[in-house]
Amino acid sequence: MIWITLIAVFVIIIAAIAVVMLRNLMAAVVATSVVTLTLSILFVVLRAPDVAMTEAVVGMGLSGVLLAMTLRKLKMNGESDHEDA
Amino acid sequence: MKTHNLTSFVFLAGLVVLLAALLVELPFGHGPMVTGQGILKQAPQTTGTANIVTSVVLGYRGLDTLGELTILFIAATAVGLVLGKQTRQHPIRQGGYILRIAADLLHPFLLLLGVYIIVHGHLTPGGGFQGGVILAIAYFLPLLAGTQNIIQEKLVSILEGLAGTAFISIGLLSMFKHGDFLAPLLGQGTLGELFSGGTLPLLYIAVGLKVGSEMAGLMMRMLQEDEPLA
Image (cartoon, rainbow over all chains, first blue to last red; front, side, top):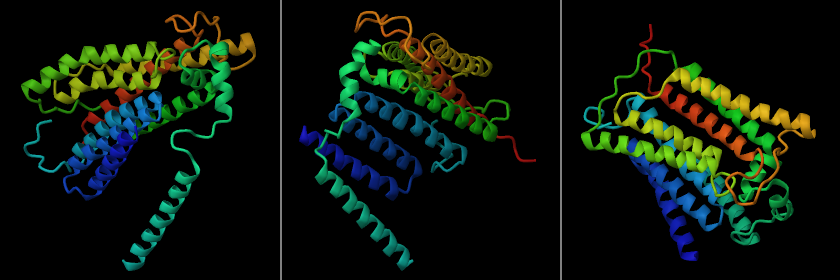
């Protein structure tokens, strides 16, 4: 159990640093999704499945889609010429 | 620039000290529970739900859930005010063949998963909020992949209004019967069965439909094309 926690915390920190460092904004959005997905694993470890579900669905699905669509609307998603939806 | 860096460093150091102190003080994974213990003891008998989180969300703190729904409604309305102008649909570039077929294939499974999570909200983890968002994503995924639009805006807004009205009217009904807003009605049934927990599953269905339709409407407005500024 402690190993899952440690790995999850490690992945969260790496992904959170990646969000700030990445030049490609779409990749940064994906990195935020990684943060929330790993955080939801941490919630499962803490025996809060309801919170984990909310975190995974809202944090990854909803806000990921919203951020990605905002980038698309602002035409900031890197190479906008040949992106495949 | 230098003072800026220094202030952020001081702030970070303070935050680290604070978090470290919290970590030392609290045993990992066992929060200090005072109200929680009491609720854990009496919730299955008083509300009849196997999932105690549901009994808190809809029974003990039902008013907070109504507040959350209101906040969500206001946020969606604000987004609609800023973005949605009922213009023509954004001509989405079609995704590749595999992407489109996969999105269409996933749609019924996601629908089923969302409905399952909403209906079993009082038995297993999950509930209206999570299932509602999954429902919205199920309708949104084909749209994002570039197949045709299957969300009807009018239907979505009608559904949203109906679900909100249902939640409030169930609450008012129990206020007239019991004197408490959102007090569980209809008896409890057997613990752990699908038809148990009184009005709580009905409330969760209302929450799920409201959240789902709100999210679908919100994301659809994001997709609509802006009119060029005149």
